[in-house]
Amino acid sequence: MKTVIVGIGGITNGGKSTLATRLHQQIPNSCLIAQDVYFKEDCEVPVDSKGFKQYDVVSALHMDRMTDHVELWKKNPESFMKQKSLRVFEESLLGKDVFVLIVEGFLIYNYRPLNSLYNKKYFLEIPYEICKTRRSTRMYNPPDPPGYFDGHVWPMYLKNRKEMEEMLSDIVFVDGLQEKDQLLDSVYKDIVEIIKGLNK
Image (tube, rainbow, N blue to C red; front, side, top):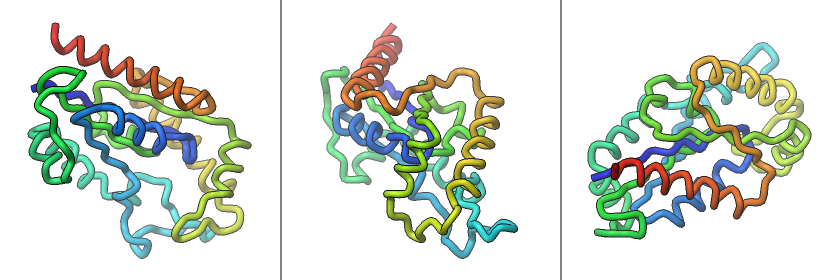
């Protein structure tokens, strides 16, 4: 059995979820784990001195639980997929007994226990103005309070990115503004090459 774990990280509203979902749809025997489902309850997330909820920190997420799920998949991807009611193909275009896990999220590279598990790490980035505009059109629960982007989201992005770059040197930075089909094709081809490498 061959397993490949691909990280799709990046800035908020940078296209992570879209790319990860499309990869999952295109790759047979793939599974998607999204970091957003591991947020702690709102009452457990601390507030800073400005009154902003501290969602953009690792401690706001159940990262230990997320890591456990990644390791469960790695141990037995077929069983993991069946538990998630995902179809398992005996053989696919990528070969026999090939399973791919896509891990998506904005802080997936800021938690050390996960970093050693990825075969490939992507990070989508977009400029400040576009990120702010996109964020303003999204509905969050709870909704962003006034000034949240400039007062918390963007400063924490810069802080988390710096921390990530100090921990890792093998991240592939990707322009999140490029055409979606082109981005999908590029990452998909990389995954195929990784699988070919496993066969050597």
